Amino acid sequence: MTLVSSRGSRAVACAATILLGALHPLALVAQDPDPLSRLDTQTRFTVEVIIDSARVAGVPTRPLLLKALEGAAKHADNRHIIAAVRSQFRAELDVRVALGSTLNESEWTSAVSALQAGVPLEALAKFRGERAGKPFTRALVVLTDLIQRGVPVPEASSAIMQLWQRGAADGDFYGLWKNVEQDILSGQNPGTALQQRMREVPVRVAPGTKLTPASQEPDNPSS
Amino acid sequence: MTELKAAIAALTFVLFAPQGALAQIASKVQAGSITTQQDGEVPASVFSVAPGIRVDLPYLALAARGSAWLTGQQWQIADGTISGDLISPVFNHFRGEVIGNASRAFFDRSLENDQVDAQARLHMLFAQRGGIWVGGGVARPWRIAVVSSVDVTGGGAWTRVGDAMLSGTYTNFFFTKVAATRDSSGTTQSCGTHNDPLALSSAGGSSLSSSATSSATNDCRRQSRFSDVEGSVNWAMGWLELTGQAGYRFGDSYDVTPDSRRWAAGTAVVWITNRVAAVMGGGRVPANPSRGLPARNYANFGMMLSYNSIPRTTVPVAPRTLAAVRDFEVRPLATGTQKITVRVGGVETVEVMGDFSDWTPLVLMRRGRDIWDITLPVTTGVHEINLRLDGGPWLAPPGLPTRRDNFSGDVGLLVVP
Image 1: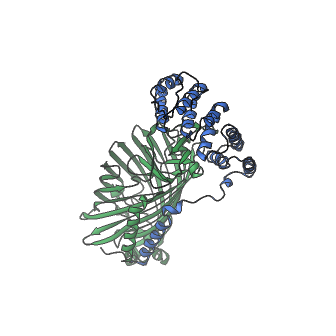
Image 2 (image 1 turned 135 degrees about the vertical axis):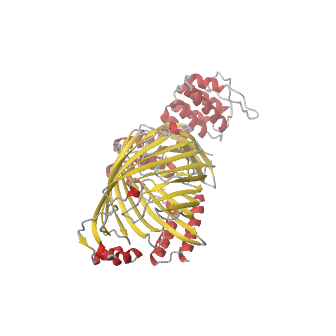
Image 3 (image 1 turned 90 degrees about the vertical axis):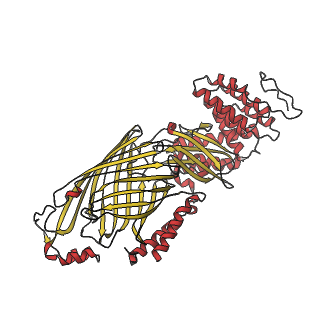
């Protein structure tokens, strides 16, 4: 046996090396310069009009673009894509009314999700009143999921607001959600599962904080 | 020595590239002993190193693999293949596939040839239980006694039974070759045209051409046709994977030599860790007349270092539900990058997409047994994410809070702290 030394082998070896180099991982992280090109002309036009409206209204435009791209990726028909983008735009306008426009991207996302899940505007607005610099992203994410899993909106909103007022950490919200999810998967009534699991969440109180009784609605929260 | 340096460079790339961030590349290296025996010859053993690399894009897979043998004190590049596989989305249970390969075999001076081939297939998927496919294509070999393109047509079916996957294929081969005037049983065959300059020039500059020249008066061009029926079963349970296959070749005695009429082989893979496995197997491989490769028995034993242990089979798997996902984990790596790991068995592809990818599907890489991962730039905050198995519906990953997506589905809400 001898080492291959034909011209053909050399060409194959070089081609393979070049191919491997060309396929380096970094080469695969390409940004689509015109993502809306995934939509047909009419849908794209309508989406662009909505995005322009959002820009004028001073609400984030990227979530609208992403919603359109999500619809295209899921092969939704054009009517549904436009409806979803419009719904997102309306929800952003409502969130701005409820929480103001000084939200970061995560807060916009979580607030829109909560609103679209069915959280009333008034309940959402309480997070602004009680905000005091406390992040509410995780609270709203968990609230959205609980409602989706069948916990009645008033009970879910009240419970999450109560926890948030008490200074629950992100881990507390996540732990509550995991436990309630397991209970629901085990066949328990969603509302009952939330009530029972709420009792297990530790109370974290900042110095000087006045506690709201657990049975009381968080309409008159302490700060 | 240029080839050896190139091979070392390629091997180095294969070993280290997958560890980079944003890796869309997977690879494996198998090393061990291979013993082969052609009928009537003394068994020969070599130490083989076989690296492979694969790049998966949403509907395109590119792969390169090769092997080098250590015989005596010298390394020899034994074979190499570069391939591409274009796969369409599933539409009403149908999926299209176009496969292209370019390969070179160089087992010894008498078994040196090249081939390019292309095939198109149409798959029909039945829920999660199985599927069928039909297809056809053409292959063009060089430097052997085949003087025409090789037409390949066939079909197959597969189904899952518990942890086992059963598949069967039927493949027809049709080509023209330069061959002896007597068949494998010694009977004189009628020849169409005696060998001509075209045939000999097509045979190329290998040693085969000289042998063809020396026996010019006894050679002829003849159309060959044979069909292979092959069944296989793959069974995976925990750390053990077993694969067995058996086949039968239909054709007259001219096209099918007795040593290739039937065959069987088996392989066992024992996973020591998620990335390291012991591989052993043996059996019989039939001749490949369209490639000029003889039938042989083989036995192999070696180790596999795997980032992508099992390349995607040509049989696609129907959509599965996320109930099969045992674990979904997102872990921070370097600044701004997250590693998404999914544990799921019995699937061929795992994809994610979300706002972080502008809702472009990204294919996860198989890292050893049942583990799939991808490293992505994901900023802190709330992100929406979907997961898909085997081209099925987009679903929210397990273990994440969810929300409705306004498109009759759900998305997972991933909070990156």
